[in-house]
Image (cartoon, rainbow, N blue to C red; front, side, top):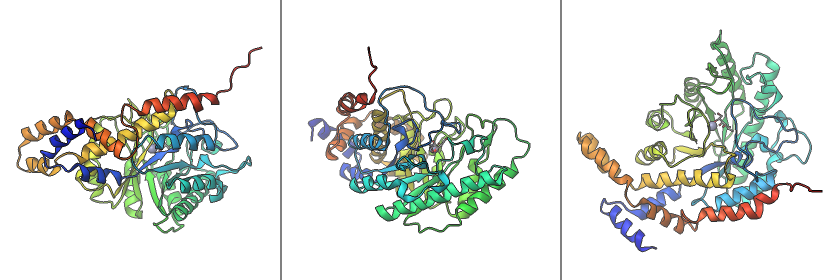
Amino acid sequence: MSTRFEFAKKDYEAWGIDLKEAFETVKKVPISVHCWQGDDLKGTEVVQNELSGGIDVTGNHPGAARNGDELRADLEKALSLIPGKHRINLHAMYAETNGVAVERDELEPKHFQKWVDWAKKHDLGLDFNPTVFGHPKSDDGLTLSHPDPAIRRFWIDHCKASRKIGEHFGKELGTPSLVNIWVPDGFKDTPSDRLTPRRRLKESLDEIYSDVYDENHVLDAVESKLFGIGSEAYVVGSHEFYMNYANQNNKLCLLDTGHFHPTEVVSNKLSAMLLFHDQLALHVSRPVRWDSDHVVAYDDELREIAQELVRNDSLDQVLIGLDFFDASINRVAAWAIGTRNMVKALLYAALLPHDHLKKLQDEGRFTERFALQEQFKTYPFGEVWDEYCRQQSTPIEREWLDIVKRYEEDVQLKRIDKAVHS
Ligand code: RNT
Ligand code: ZN
């Protein structure tokens, strides 16, 4: 324990804040770390397709993982830099099928056995997503809502297969797998019929969810979106669509922080959603001018989300997952920065005098409320964060980057085929 931490501790204790308790609170929160930051959403399928569906990864930083083993090694490195015990979020495109091409509607739990074995070894839970993009059958920009029943069938079967894989994860790992459905369906320009595609999506979902799983194994989520590249005018699976679907069918709404109007914030939605849903899921991301999926920064909105979760006592109800992909920086560093920031924001939130701040609000003492909210921003939080990292045997803020640099040198850069000079 550093002396600087001792001083910081006193500052917080003056407000009646118990640091030990705050550490315990944050320690219990698993973050679902998305595997797709490690390879720019390339996946490990035998037949490789171009990324599509209006999501895009830019940048050419060297050293991306080229296969499942490299991806898992990079994830291990990233996890070693992040305090706490977390989970891994997989996509169906990360199947490993021994060089045999397996269509997505025929995927089975065995195609993810390497992930399961690895997760067991490292005591990690696994979440899952059907990959409903980056495939010839999604080229029309419509999948579960496609007018062609054969295309719908293919994607319905893929989603059904995905839930079965999720069930396997849940059973094998003893923690439910969150299976999240996001589909890119939408139109670039003004539709002449908004209702029918939404009706078809609803019917497809009903069919997918007609398979019943124990919620100790599978939790189902549906992820909405406002617009995407190529679906600027209309997205079939809008927020209202899924919010109502989830409510009626006892599913989790997954709110992605990049999937709303630019001035709309997810932090302001959580309390409203939580009054009507037992559970919710998040994709924490950072939209820069659009749904750009930048690495999560320690910014105002991240802290606000964390504060909502902490002060509403809803950390058990809201499943936190990350969703960003940046190929312009070291990918292990991207995981470390984004995930550490999420945990950091939770710790920041756990160190605020919420009861006092709530009281100030109820008593109409808004000057004091604002002054105090601002005051805490310059409290010696960095010292407390470092101490939290130390106690979790993870590097403190100024240490982790050197570890990544060494890993880049020793492992990631060696993946690049050296140019052959004659
Ligand atoms: C796309 C959604 C979706 C994807 C991942 C890869 O806009 O956010 O969650 O990013 O499934
Ligand atoms: Zn998302």
